[in-house]
Every structure is written in C-alpha cells, then in structure tokens.
Length: 264
Length: 322
Image 1 (spheres, rainbow over the protein chains, first blue to last red):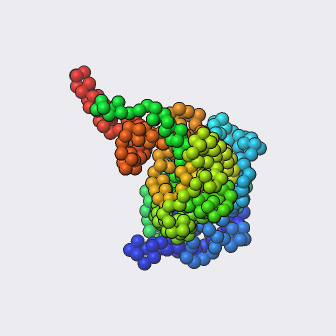
Image 2: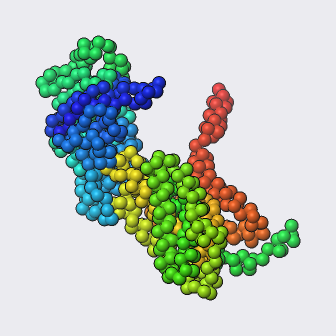
Image 3: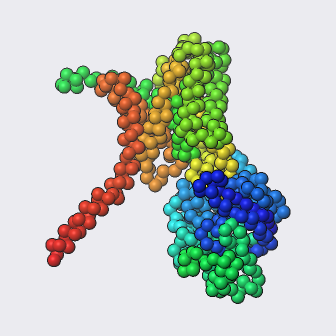
C-alpha cells in the first residue's frame, strides 16, 4: 500500500545547520498494516512522515502509494491518498470554523471544490451519527467553533476527519504527545477503533515505547535517518521495553538517548 | 470658546448627513473587499489603494468614450480583479510577502491608472452629459443605489463563502497546514480571494467616481485604512449589539454599517470645523482606537498589573491575619 524506496533528505544543505535527516529510508507497508515508529529525537520519524505527506520534495528516492508514484506530487495533491493527524492539536482543524464545517471540508478531500453548498443535509446527519460514536457530546455542538474544543476533542475530530474519506494511508505524527495521559489513552483507543473498523493502513510515530508495542501489527525503529529495526507478527507481540532498548544498542551501537522514550 | 460653539450650526450637520451616509455606503462596499482579504484570508492587502483608483479611472474613461455605465462598471471590476491577481501571483509564485506584494502592485497601479486616464491626474464625469447609476446631485437616489449594491453583494458573498470553494478559502486563511492536508490548493485559494476582493474594491471606486463626478489618481490613497476602519468599527459594534448571535451575514452587514459610521464621524469632525487637512490624522487615530479596544478589553480582564495588585493585597491581608 505504501512503499518508501531509498529516500534521502538533507535540510539546510551547505550551511552550518546542515542535517541529513533521511539517509536512505526503505519501508514497505502492506494493506491493513498498522506500523508504529519509534526512535530518539532527530532520528527522522516525523521527517519520514512528512516525506510521505509531501511537505517538501525529497532529494533522492521514490514514494509509492497504492502503486502510484507520488514523489513528484505536491502536498495538496497527495492529500487525496492520505489522512493525517498532527502532534499539535491546533494543526489538524480550523479553529474559526464550525465542527460540521471542518468535517465537511475533510469529506471533500481529493475532490473538486466547486460552487455547491459546502455542507449537505445528509452530511449533517452522517456527522451527527459519527460524532455520537466518539462519545464526547460533540454531536450536540456541531455548529460550535472548533476553537472552543479542548486539545483531546480536537484530536478526536481530526481523527474522524482523516477517516471520512477512506485514506490509502493514515499518518499519525505523535498525535497524543500534546495530551494529558488520560486523554492520550482515550485518543489512542479511538485511533485503534477507527483503524480497525475502516481497515486502514496506518503509520504512527510515538515517543512512548509501551504504546508502540501495544498498538499495531508492526514496529519499526529509526536512527540517524534510517530504519534500523523492523519487527512484525508474533515477534512484536512478545516485545518488551527492555527488549527494544537492548535491540537498539545492538543495532546502533549507541545507548538509547531519549529519557522521554524510556519514561513515557 | 463661546463664539466657537455658537458658530456651530446643527442644521449644517443635518444637511451634510445624507451625503455622509451615501459616501459611507460606497466605502462600506469597498470595506467588504477588505474584509475578504484582511479577515477571511488573513492577508493584509495594500493593493486596494491602487485598485480603488483603477476602478474609478476605468469607469470614467469608458463612460466618457461612449460606453454604457454598467458595462464600464463591470470592466472596472474586472480591472480590479486583475490587480488582485497580480498581487496574488507576486505572493504565491514569486514568494514575496503579502504586505510587500500589495505595495508593489499598488505603486505600479499609480502609473497604470495615470495611463488609463490619458496621463491626467483627474478626469471629470459629469452627470449632465452621461447617464450614471448614482450622483451626489441626487442623494436619496445615491443612498438607495448604495443600499441595493450592499444588499446584493452581501447576499452573494454570504452564498459564495458557504460553498465548497468559499469554505476552502476560509480554511486557507485560518489554517494553511490543515488546508493542504485536506487537499486544498492554498495558492489558488489566495489568488481567488485576492481577485474577488479587489474586484469589489474597484467596483466601489467606480461608484465613488460617479458619485463625486470625477476620477482622481489619488482617490484611493489611504483607502486601506478607511476599509480597515469600517471593518473594525463594524466588528466592535456588531459584537457589542449582537453578541453571540453574530453570524456571517451579520458580520458583512456590520462592515457596511462600519463604513457609514466612519463617514458620519468624519462629518462630525468637519462640522466641528477641524481643518480638513488633518482628516487623515483623525482617520489614523480612529482606526488605532478601534483596533486597540478589543486588545485593551482583554488586557483589563487579565493583566500582570492586576495580578500583581491582587497578590499584594493577598499578602497584606494574610499579614493582618497574623
């Protein structure tokens, strides 16, 4: 479903801030795969997601979604294949627009936006049902501005938006990192539910090793802009945080640097 | 002092009022264009000073060369549309920051406008010679025409910004990152918004040139400030009156009302016999005040000074308790 072939990206080339962020990333996701991505700060996790999303063009390599080479497509054109939830709850939704308007915008992802009314009656009913399933009471506040919602509520709405038009790949970039632990757990459970119910292919970056182990059917670890560990199936189910730390040291020859990943 | 007050004639103010209202309506229409860029697109577009005069210039020149006034006004709007596109392309295709892109187009339009007006700084359009849509000669008609244009335009804008495309423009202005992730081509949305805004501004310039009976290459100077004044006066007033019931229709309506109020205030200032050379100074002060009101309101609710005073009072209170 998603294929990343030998992707390289260097930021600030030729300056003192030069950073080889992606260093030949290779990764293949089959349909229905839910991959969790871990790694220390600066390992290239978010950069890899941004490469897929098309935030900027890659320097080398190619990216295929469902067999289509999207390497040359700008972000807004790739959007028709992708659902995205960001780390910052403010990024995924439009604060000055109503909840239903935000959903309607997402329902038209990848479609031409013409002069038809921005939201139909049937959609309003559909959104009401879907919001009800979130169990956050948002179905009664459909005409409230999204800016009035809490971070957790906004992430829940963003998740819903990402799945309204079934994406080929769902990209989750540390989407629970800015939430308190209780809300984060709720949003993660919702993530699982949406991925399972819609049979989505997903990639989730997280700093939390326990979450990375508990969710998804595959786990990859990144270091220095490369995928250094790729675990799937039964092996993943048996993983522990200690295993991961040990494996990291074996493969990279360094100690796992991020305290946040350890403690989280 | 007494002499000054006795010299003020209430009747004179009353006589000037219909003219102020008519002019306010025309500038209120212009402010609807400013509202699109400033509020919906979050793009402080300074093109308008130029495109307003372009609208006047095209309207006058086409009319005196024998074209129907409606056709002239339509072409004026199209000229404004192109000016907006120009600013949009400078920004989206060449990466020039919004304010600079607007200033560049504005300054270029000065020459363009002079060329449109046959290299004259001023061209007359007499109601005696041509059939015009409105004129300051007939203020009742001018006000009715202004009202009709406002109502039709507000209805059209309300509809457009409710459509899929209009919603995409609103999303672009508020959250470009999210818009891109939803597959919206934000460059195109900015182009459409700027084009639409400047088309409206130019149309308003075309109306003013008919009202005042001439087009002047400087007629748009400071226009952005007047437009902003109308937008902000309208918003502050609308929020105060409608509160939570303020919706998009209400906002657009109050933008036009803001234009009228602005011109009534200017009328009062002139009636108080303040020198007209100082008008721009007054305008700047009015806009600064209305821009500051929402900020200061927020400050009065939560400020360091207040927090400090409270803390000091608490400390004093607990000392007494001991």
